[in-house]
Length: 189
Ligand SMILES: [Zn+2]
Image (cartoon, rainbow, N blue to C red; front, side, top):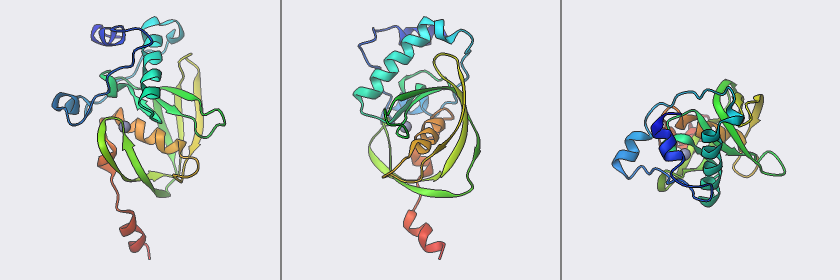
């Protein structure tokens, strides 16, 4: 972790959430467009700074009532995000470090009501893959490889959360992927 990242991380204890950067703030909006970099996952389980960061990020996600949040959204341009396992009964929070999307369905669908904790008062439809094959490390440093699904708003959309959060690491926001679902249906006829 850089000194600047340590300052942000250790500014408060585990009971204080981070401030979430907002696109209607000029400096924040520029930061959100940055590309994030990988984290050294060797001994990550024993790294007090990263563990404290993850703890505070989990709290931030909870108080913001989100389904996912990426490190750059709290001012740390690193390849790390959280996503809720809505594909599991316990709806656990999953930590994804240095994530990759290694394969995806050609078939896409229109995900209605995409939204972002960094973009106030806006929701829209985005075009998303129906499944993705992903690889990442968790907070213990375990390497995880799995297929995530998500082809509907009503059912499982874990794969969509992953796609949304993954985009943040490249400075891409859901508003870059807005999609006219009705027009797409019309065109496919
Ligand atoms: Zn977002």
